[in-house]
Length: 327
Image 1: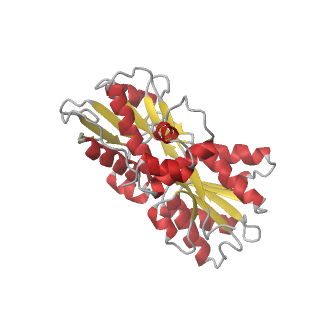
Image 2: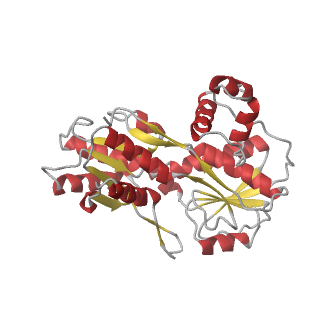
């Protein structure tokens, strides 16, 4: 089993630095590149934190805003949930599930991990059950609640920077719209926002090249077919796609139209789901460390159940994985 020492030797930093990076020590002054390398090597070596001594009476509830059917369409949240469950198993923590429609626990729980997009109103409802709350993939109020998020703004900019460096100037976007389940608001997607802002700064944004639907394979297929029909002679030479499910559907539509990938059109998705390596050509994607997000949520909850009072937000790194679908 890999150790912190193994990671430190591979990266070329001290054991203390590796430990502080893996525990998201915000007072540590090292470069983002070093932090990224630590997480990459940790994953490559399959490093897992050792389970600490915890009372086996801890019981936490998981609230997932996606149903099991929705999880299969977009495995991003499933992977986060599995990370939570693995970490709980390692720590000897009992798990119970709560429904988003009825998030009241029938028994006392020590804490709640909420996976998905939750409004401030929903967060306040959950807090009526326990002060020990961690949100994963959203931050209803960073001053009040612990949260684990990914920096999709930076991930989008990295993908677009890569496209531009390869000479692409006509870049399209295929993404999804989401709303809080209590219908209080439409959620502002950071990928869509960052895409527009970044390309406007470069003088390359064209609103007619933006296609929005649901985060599913079917919608990726439909939206790409729509883009091909709208621009038969001037299809963008590159598409940034909001998640891998959408990108896989878009890839199918491009193949059916006889458009060569990546010679005529390049694609980059988001999430690096397992099947993205095995489609043809293999999908370039922004890797999101979803299992790490789940594991980190458990660690934050344990801190909160200890003596930490101040809310804490942890931002987990992403990495651009270039494969055969982009040039």
